[in-house]
Length: 217
Length: 410
Image 1: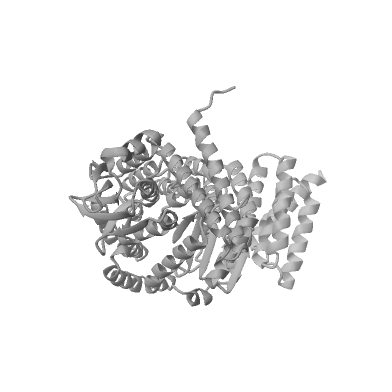
Image 2: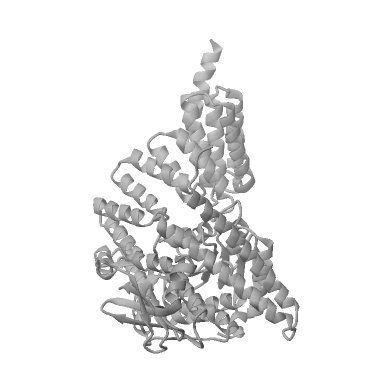
């Protein structure tokens, strides 16, 4: 038998699984609509729905990771209104935050424009927020600014911060995939000879951890 | 955007999977859409688009065995079957999105990746409609082919909504190309590229260079685009155009063959390959290209008799050098039947069809059949159903009959 590339096999297996998660989500939505809103089962259904959504987002992250690592990712940059982009991210992730009784907000200057690959950055912000959801005490904030020719997207929380357990968790127990993925995504953005990068910091506003993604403009 | 905005709009939903179709239809009616048409495949969608107009088109990329959502989009945009003012939202999977984003020439207004919730679809759709609303005057001018007005409107939109600058700049550049002001177009696109390597701007530069006759420069830019983006298959069509302009027909032909290996369902490319192969006398390739084109044409907006006639003409050309194989003869008859079925109302098509049948009979030295066709043709010409044979054709036929008669007499 011809020896096959195991990472390609895994990538297509992940894709299959992701599709099944999609089907489950559709079916769950149908189930949700069939019972009244007041029903106590709704809470459980929401939890299952959130978990499936997270699972789907993780599979997407792994697929992109595979493509980035094997130079198969085709970067498609475009110009976006940052306000709209962050609003979209909060909209997609808010229910996950609410399910944990956490506040998720965003802040950025009005009329801020940025150039980046929307799909990748959606996955990166999602990964960072899912991670922050595990450590934040009450609040997570996504923010953005432009400094020295870089668009900086930050994910801040009010947890213990990177110097304690959070950093280790992102790197170690999650096998470091999330951070590695964010790094590859940032560095795939290249403009005028500069590439993107990450910074792990202490959040100046929320005093917890801050992951800052620098994207050259 | 509240539901009353959706209520007045007409939607077309194209999705092959029953479960997703039912779900999406329900979502759309929940948003307030009152007019929703459904198509299960691209071919059905095409028929609907030919006969009705829609404001919103929600199409899956994956549509089973026939055309995919991107091919459908390219065809309807290319043939102006849907106005620029309509909103096209493509539903994709993670694997197919690159095909959609890579098609720089014809892109949907937006895309949404599966799976998505009702809330996400509603939000995406509302935002898209808002964007199209802002660009309405630009797109209406484009639909009316009033390029000066479109450029003027685009400049205004750009000032009011900085986030739409890229889209507006692209419209202005494309309008300049339409107005054959290639130098200005080139300057505009180059200026954008100074800031940022935007594929559409590089594409604009490449087109402008092509029209200005700077073919080598244009080729370099298209090659760069293909290198940056392996899903940009229409770059092959442009390269073939460049090679044709340089009279390097064989190179053009191999470029098209390579592109068709990647997307065999592209009708216009099949026709292009067929025509090019005619030019260089490669009737074998011409026949196979037009055979595929005939197969693809039926459910497209390019379903004209020309495609079918070119196919049988290519078989005649083959018969001129060697007797036809039974398979080729069969292909001839299949396409002939289709012409009879779909195009026999056209008097020119009838005349051309008879001329090919007559020619084939002559090549097969079947004079009785040949004469029969001429008689039929002339009868129908008298009744006005077919265009009459030209004097030149008649001379040719009579000579053929006469000579062969004499031969038979010996």
